[in-house]
Image 1 (cartoon, rainbow, N blue to C red):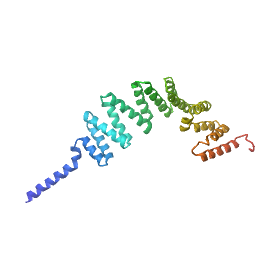
Image 2: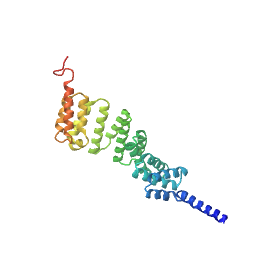
Image 3: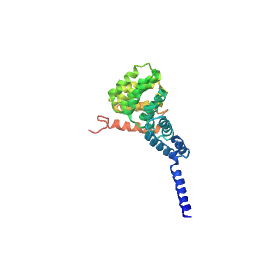
Image 4: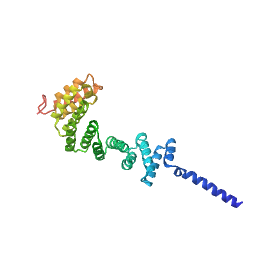
Length: 270
């Protein structure tokens, strides 16, 4: 009787052990998909990261990385984990199309989400070398310029912008380059040159300039130059179509106060 009881305990222990480690006995992708279907996508990502680390090469790890990247990037917006998966794919995939798409995802994550512009530069330099048409070359050249700009590397940003503007650009691409040029000019305190370009863009592309906020950029330039009359005039012209006219009125009144308080203004005590 005691022997039967002992055997029963062994059987119960075996069942519990199999239940607890069942996740690890399944194929990793099947186990991860089971977790995902249960709403445990974060657990699935962490599970796949560990499995990929334990078997760093091979077709299975590549499949793990591809599914993990899909979960982390597109479903969870877990960009740090997505980068780990994508870097693995970039290093070990033998499919050129797969590698290229992975680099594009990495560039977007580094630039738009992680704001890691040093890594973005590395990725976009690789993409620029792989570019096969003018549209791709212009896209990555401008992204390189913006990455350098965000690192306060103004000389490099200007060099990349110059190379960008030398390409055969569409009207839309040239517009984007000129807008970025105004950012560079403002960063160098060259507001007069920036206002000239902004006025040209607003006149030539009124709807797009309005959508992109170029009118307010122009106002900011005038304010930095302490040309309050031009700033007030620009906002007055905007008032009829601006979504928040009360904000403009408040800003106009503040500029009028600043103007009246300037040295030499009428009524200012000496």
